[in-house]
Length: 151
Image (cartoon, rainbow, N blue to C red; front, top):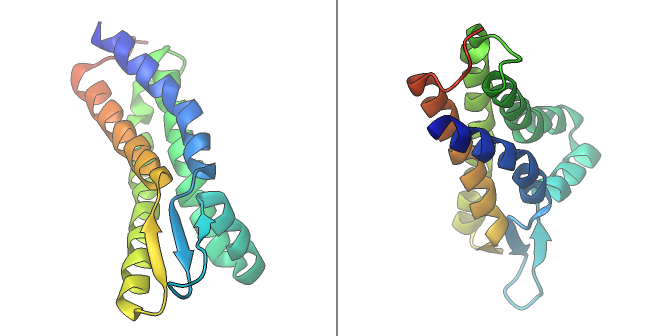
């Protein structure tokens, strides 16, 4: 039973991650009197690609590729299409994916600390965080329960 639930939860992340990438993570504005711009993972990456290509590559790896590749890998494990020996590599991908949450938290903290702008957290930040945390829980339960077919 748990194996089936883990499979479906993991597969749902393949849909929820892209939604979270385009969902507004926060609304930011320079002064309280002006309207706020919505910032998503994708709009943030678009801005980075214009200003700092190296940082854009790093954030793209951590925010998009690492969590999605981990999700695909766990799905392949669940369906017996990938060896159990790859689980440590998938766990490393999951740890890399947590770096984007740190970057977002740092950005919010710095902006609030400066006092010039205004930041409001949007629903996409909660969705994105939930996807990352669900992925961690799924891989942990998969490893602990052996919820994978044996090769």
